[in-house]
Image (cartoon, rainbow, N blue to C red):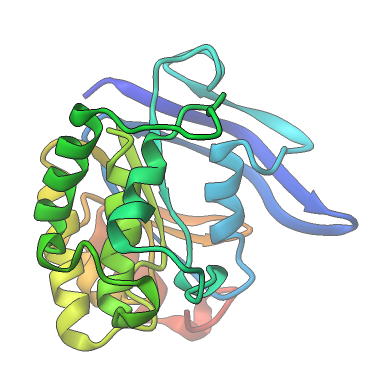
Length: 239
């Protein structure tokens, strides 16, 4: 596997509050990385820093040895479900089509036939083709989460970043989403934040325990043992 993203000595602060400290790790093409850790440990901040939404006060992030803007690395992002307005008057298909909007959009933009075909293909992939015309306020938690994944996939990303994609959904939807993510990893790199540690330990290729800095990184079962079998010995206690 070749290097996709390199994070070197990255530290982030919000005012005087340190969110990340001296992070060093590499994301390689084809990776499936699970990120676990306590609330407030900097997990969401890490994804936003990779996306360029948060700037580190120290350190660098390179994408195929250059900056994100200069590289050809395309990133798909699935935010936490509770960050979004579910009452906005829009359908499932319209949400996903919005990923195809150009930066300099005309007032009456018309999607191409290719855009529509690609979006319908993504809807089929996530299992939402039959409800593509449903209003988003009518979706279950699992359907809403699959829609967010579909929107990220519509940009044809090289890497998919997911922030708690199985929170606020039922057990059956959790299983479906993890199965979907595993299959997506056949064609793209995955980085996922989750509190469902047992599930991610079973299928991720690497696991990172993050508590402002990296406490453990590598084989998922070794990281799991480090974090859970002797939690009283760990600085953050139980995750």
